[in-house]
Length: 298
Ligand SMILES: Cc1ncc(COP(=O)(O)O)c(C=O)c1O
Image 1 (cartoon, rainbow, N blue to C red):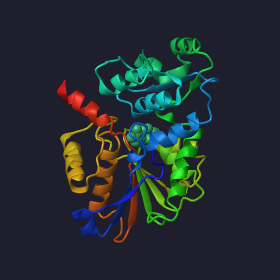
Image 2 (cartoon, helix red, strand yellow; image 1 turned 120 degrees about the horizontal axis):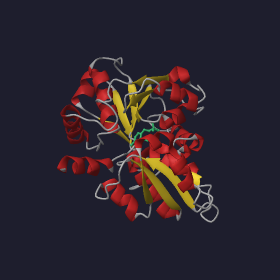
Image 3 (tube, helix red, strand yellow; image 1 turned 90 degrees about the vertical axis):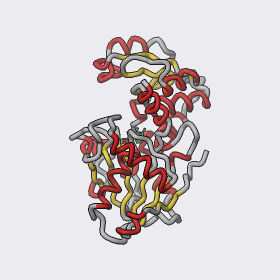
């Protein structure tokens, strides 16, 4: 495990042309299975628990969820039993769910209407009540304990070449990771959160989670969701292929591919003045690449 994830300088023709200094903090390299923002979000959710007191971790996610995958891995390593409620049907050939099962996670399918209510859906509450003293970790791991883990990323920048960046950029889903950055007392940069989904209220959710701390530094960009959550098109896939070839940094199509597409597009359109220094946080999600291959093969 490498919590102080490496920071790499990205050099492309566009960056040279526009005189933009871009770094990527490779949180995807923190851990082979519990990587990216998942490691930071789960850290304080799990580290204070004793498997003997809370034998079961209960959580929620979609069929290709990075959060379910990471939670299954973390619970296996920490010897917690775990249950994942999955939105929709369970296809055991799906590589994400296949891994979760192999790591010992019990998977339970949920109707889309129950999924909206999660643990308060009567059927779900009934199932949860059968576990001994369960701990519920919300979808995407987003809660106050997660924010604390994420805020430590800003501490890690002290003394590095990214200490004084003008902008920090990242992909955004529930808003928990962005909110965690905003709660840091040491945050100096503006934060651009690229929404991976269609949402008009993400900005309010982030502000609610971070109690409006550093709200003057928050910019939510909703222009690069490519049709909605987990949707993609050939333009996005081509961008990912080209970016990977040019930089050797792998990208998923759900989060970081979209965010970096958005960032490069803003750079191409002179959103940032010459000399701007930017750090993108690679939030992981690379297990989803196998899911994309699986979906395309069907
Ligand atoms: C790889 C990856 N990046 C970014 C995000 C978005 O994080 P958040 O939900 O905290 O906004 C997620 C989802 O949690 C994710 O799995």
